[in-house]
Length: 601
Image 1 (cartoon, helix red, strand yellow):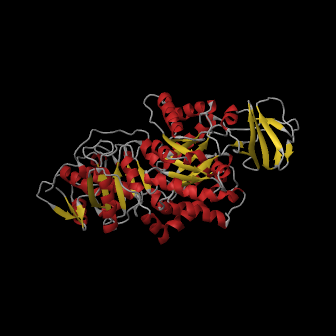
Image 2 (cartoon, rainbow, N blue to C red):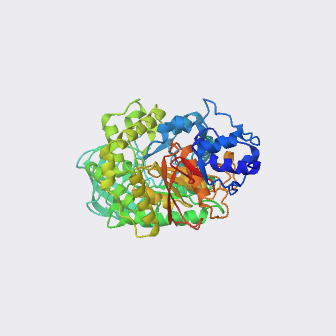
Image 3 (tube, rainbow, N blue to C red):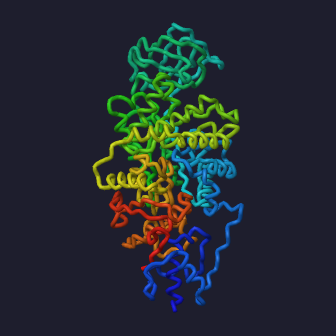
């Protein structure tokens, strides 16, 4: 007769590897802590999952307790299959939070509608308001056991003219001369203060200055100590504190204002996952924010990823774009200011150039600004807007973003849902797969890149359901996303911060087991504990690692049949950052099963 202890051990191995693992879990307190290394003591070498469960069920010493089925209205991880469409997309979605989306109820709706990342815009509202939103997001993350990234967006320098004598401003005529100077007196029809000596210093004869988002165009015709004389090319109304853009000049100013420095320190304190830097002009700007983060990061805190917002023409001078992408962790195509400072016909080409460079270096890239602008006031977008969103997806962007649509519009949930509908439609189009396959970045000549390339090819050949990447800091997962495989990438990390940052990347489904890549001595209820991540001492029990990869794939809804195949990559010895040197093909039933037969050693 098989001993009770042996039966428990056999059941534990089978419950995480057999077809029956797809049913509600069998649980007893003793069973959850049984050793996975115990062996059957009667020479049983292999058996079918059904036969093994029959043996266990008929044993007089075995009396399992069934865990209750989740209620129909449950929103725990067990309900994920009901949200299958929510996960069936590769392109990620960013939603900006604001007055229209500041309640927990609305933020949860946006998450369920497709939002993977929430943007906190520090240009508006108080720091305390941003912390309240972050707390709500973390509560939703815990409720659904799915990492959600939070992007803190710094305002950056705001270049503006001074004030006019007339509260209504003045009207400038085409061809007239208009002076910008450092005189603090109120302006009139002939002049106004420009409280930015760096603009005067950097401007040359023939340079263009744009006022009020390009509505007024000035050409510098003369320059002296503390002033610029300009010819009005396109006139119009100019009033107090209107913005000024300098498309022809690289200004000798920091992208970080005193307000930005205060906001950045606050972001580091509350724990945002990404920091977006505005007004990037040169690679040195990225080095500056990295140095400031290193200086201000609280001891023991996880360093956030840095995203550069490309919105200045100077980013395209010589090799600046390449170096900016190299220095940062992600890129945003900020088409608002970029569209003001560059010719409209150039913006689509620059968008493609930025996306291609980001993909070549394996950095996530976001396309932003006015994607569904009309949905601020309308429940449906224009056809041109739908086409614009689709174009960004066809170009290969990792993510697309909503600004005022979700922050201040009348239809925030509908805007996010519409983006997801467009994503699903484009990604089901064969032209999309063809475009991605024809524009494959060159892989580096490293063992990790070779492993990832092989994993992609294997997945294509065997029609695998997912590529599973174990990664400490996410570098292996990013390499997999760079190649745009035709199957989802399940990214598993022991660090909740890494999992959250990976939510920005194309095709990645981040997961967060409590004990990272090692998973021993853990009960099912604690498998996805977000706030108590523990990195265990590395072991050589690779089968245990694979078994938990199968569990994670099932929880995410990436597999639906025990014979579905997964391609798993990992690094041995465990815990070595950037090391991926192992590939294993396993069925969803577990590493000990093949063709419906499970082996018990």
